[in-house]
Length: 511
Ligand SMILES: Cc1cc2nc3c(=O)[nH]c(=O)nc-3n(C[C@H](O)[C@H](O)[C@H](O)COP(=O)(O)OP(=O)(O)OC[C@H]3O[C@@H](n4cnc5c(N)ncnc54)[C@H](O)[C@@H]3O)c2cc1C
Ligand SMILES: *[C@@H]1O[C@H](CO)[C@@H](O)[C@H](O)[C@H]1NC(C)=O
Ligand SMILES: *[C@@H]1O[C@H](CO)[C@@H](O)[C@H](O)[C@H]1NC(C)=O
Ligand SMILES: *[C@@H]1O[C@H](CO)[C@@H](O)[C@H](O)[C@H]1NC(C)=O
Ligand SMILES: *[C@@H]1O[C@H](CO)[C@@H](O)[C@H](O)[C@H]1NC(C)=O
Ligand SMILES: *[C@@H]1O[C@H](CO)[C@@H](O)[C@H](O)[C@H]1NC(C)=O
Ligand SMILES: *[C@@H]1O[C@H](CO)[C@@H](O)[C@H](O)[C@H]1NC(C)=O
Image 1 (cartoon, rainbow, N blue to C red):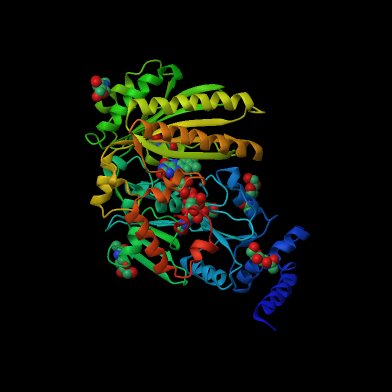
Image 2 (cartoon, rainbow, N blue to C red):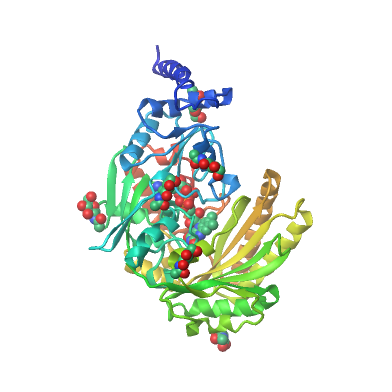
């Protein structure tokens, strides 16, 4: 009997037993479920003695599936497994790596909006949701953050110590995707990207070994993980350098769209001034939403020292016709809860970057207005949201990155301040998502081309906001691409994380 026949026989025998095992909870057995349970991947995990394996129809399976931010990402894996320790993650990787048909996905906060980044059809989803503890070490001010945590849990655990870390600006974002992809934070002007503040990673590599990566142990992997995404292994813990943090001054201010020109002028000046005022953050949103049925402007302003209305905000504060304001002194955690976005839609996002130039921002927002008008005209239910968002990417961010040892983003190649323009389209139904993607690609290309035509093009495309039709790793510079490739090959010579865990942006797909 050949080896593969044997596997087949033993797995179907096991499947028959499993269909009646306690894990297939009573009353929920149906043929769909049996065939899923029959898949050798889940069977092998059960056989290995692993716990917390859930199949479709189970409450935990359904709830975890619905907890992905974007409906587009709510796929149906054969089973979801929730490990509780690095050792269990290692055992899962070892078990799944044994057989080349056992594909899998890894999920932390589940906030990547496109299908298949952190979830999978025809495979197993490893869900780190139970690994969500943050331990603070006061002597070294290090926050040991388990990889399935969401930022609100991290900030909540650190608040009693009067410290915080460079995490997400929205409370439900997961730490692992955010930190392995870079991480734009309220503190970037002072401390660089989220990943620049990680001092040690605990990682399960393809062999099933649990290794540390830091400045002295596996330093090549350490650097690669700072922006190189899911190409090397499964991170199980991030050790971050925490810092004393007073409450912040921050909140949301809304304005009518008629103030667009003033916002553009103020934002361009703001971006150039970050080098002189590193404690602030400003994100400005042009948003169509179905309640307002119009575009309104919302700005999120923060001062991370708690200074009220520092002079750097003067130009923003002088913009007339504010319609609401929640500016106040509050905790980091609370300000990220306020910045929660609406979930429950299918999402198509993109982000590109161009030089900090009024003409380029004006054009991008003109095209956003045009996109919204066209979308409204064809939307069958009128129920959609479309954000056009400005985020400053001044050179001081990457100067801080370099000071802290460097990362994979490649922004240190840029000599001019830039703006990241991000668009988020939220719709209902597969057809609208499909049409949305076609139009978003055209929108993106039009903005990009305009910036190139005016001599203000910037290569960099941020992985954490990129659509799957983008190729962000290819924009990180040859040196970094080579480093990511070398480290991926060194720690994963058979390419488990390139082929068997197909989700996310893979270095093997970069030309
Ligand atoms: C509402 C919202 C707000 C956001 N706000 C910000 C923001 O303020 N700043 C910012 O920079 N970005 C922000 N983002 C983008 C965010 O950083 C990315 O979506 C990021 O990938 C989310 O991380 P996650 O763990 O939730 O994602 P997931 O979808 O769970 O994972 C993302 C990727 O990382 C991989 N991955 C997950 N866990 C691991 C692991 N343990 N080891 C290795 N790889 C792993 C996954 O396979 C996947 O490819 C926001 C996104 C949303 C939806
Ligand atoms: C399990 O899934 C893999 C990957 O799709 C597939 O090749 C294999 O045939 C499945 N096994 C069973 C027993 O269904
Ligand atoms: C799943 O979600 C439902 C609805 O929110 C809730 O009532 C139920 O307790 C949840 N079940 C589990 C196992 O988390
Ligand atoms: C971790 O997740 C569990 C299960 O979802 C939840 O009950 C718990 O509150 C979370 N822990 C923290 C620190 O938030
Ligand atoms: C780096 O890894 C080594 C080996 O595991 C460990 O002893 C050391 O404490 C780590 N350094 C940091 C800063 O975590
Ligand atoms: C914004 O910048 C422009 C050009 O650099 C300058 O002329 C203008 O005074 C600035 N506005 C404010 C309010 O600082
Ligand atoms: C943070 O939000 C919680 C819940 O709304 C509130 O009770 C608390 O007072 C807030 N913290 C501050 C400092 O305002």
